[in-house]
Length: 305
Ligand code: GH3
Ligand code: MG
Ligand code: MG
Ligand code: MG
Image 1 (cartoon, rainbow, N blue to C red):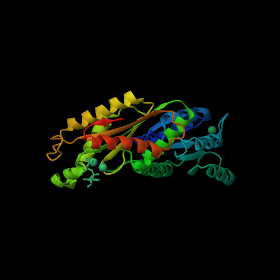
Image 2 (image 1 turned 90 degrees about the vertical axis):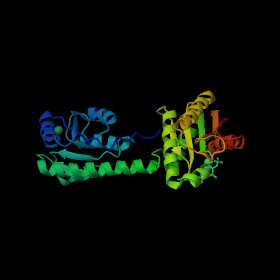
Image 3 (image 1 turned 45 degrees about the vertical axis):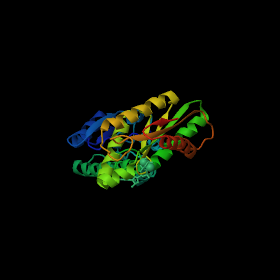
Image 4 (image 1 turned 60 degrees about the vertical axis):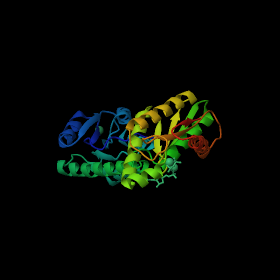
């Protein structure tokens, strides 16, 4: 859930917005060796393209027929998916009042035409790098470092969004909670680093089992995980949980002292309901945890709903 962030490895994508093709060609020639470049010839086109292309930086002309650059910048800053994209005005308007206006609208920089290629290249490089670091921080803020799953804070935010949605519309929501069986004994037998590797492998198995784009898998605590399945009824959640159990057993991680199985297993609890208006995120976790507790007390390596 939440905003998808672009992968780190690709070249930065710069969008050039100018009503004159000649200007776009000049700027494109300055940047094309280092960046992927896309362009728009009007303000409205710029907004539409920015929403689909999600550029890392926008170079924005001011004087354009129809929607001018200032209006485009204001609209970008009001769009939650675009507000973090840095905007550099590139314009023939050189007086300080225009520059003030551009910066006060949230642009990160203001460059006058004709552009000086090395200076423009340097400014773009600085801002694209800052954007990359910001994206990386944003990604880290929602990610568990050991497993790459969502972290607990992101899980709780997602559950808030999903429970608020339930209060508005008749929808199913399922929350699946799982915990590795006899994990203390696993650490004792194989060591803490092997325990960490086991947690990461179980997380990978979880990712293989929980597949819908709107599903979220999170590491809730040490060896406990929670999956949020929006729109999933109980039967769907049951089959996802069964697949989780299957994927984990398929890892075949030896656990001689498990007392249940020769391999690492998980116990699973499911909370599933339709439009429980007013149920708080923590209540959903508690409901799933109560079922997980039953799975534990009834012998582990099983699913309870
Ligand atoms: P049960 O089947 O009832 O779940 O038994 P358990 O031993 O798995 O349960 P318990 O909650 O008592 O123990 C969990 C253990 O997980 C305790 C702790 O040492 C270990 N653990 C928690 N976080 C981590 C971690 O990040 N890495 C490793 N290696 N171990 C962890
Ligand atoms: Mg123009
Ligand atoms: Mg536990
Ligand atoms: Mg455990």
